[in-house]
Length: 112
Length: 117
Image (cartoon, rainbow over all chains, first blue to last red; front, side, top):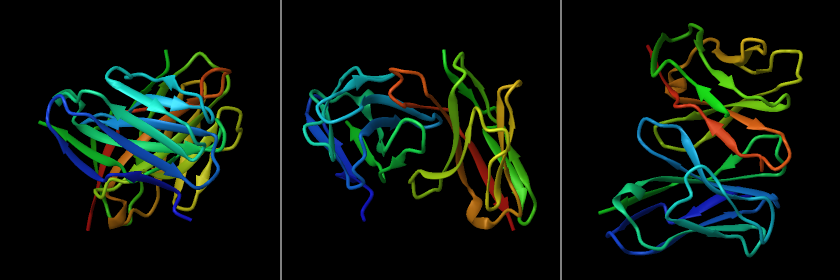
């Protein structure tokens, strides 16, 4: 039982490059979330999904897109990376909107 | 608007002593949940303890307990008998249960706890 996994763990991009972060969960959870964590700050929600085929914007969605084509996967895309997107990205999932969210190990992204 | 405030950027505690980490929140919803997560230096987010807004008893989970004061909108985390492994960043977070909230978590800025031997 792997829980929530994220691919890749580390990535360095140049300004303007694109990339996709993959989140996968094996707990059959309906709800999935992408957060970013910047130094000295708590996690901030980028986008989330309340079920397969659905997505919604969070607090800081600009510059990111997401897709949830399969229930177990939630993809976060950066079309044209900017240095301001240098951050640690966490994916999370939960069975419902009441109990705890389970987090992946994070992806450390650096944009030069 | 929902907001979580953790006013202690850093805390020190002697090993085996108890420590309290403060958290206040702001919400207009009557139905919500409060969560504490631990983030060690390795970076993962570890769920510790949960308190629902309608729970009458303070939550406890092993050495972790919450001092939940609903009228004051505070939910302080108490760690008893601190251990060196408790050194980490601690985040308080809130989930509003209202329709269309999507169950998203709102996080505070965190408190870095250092346990001294």
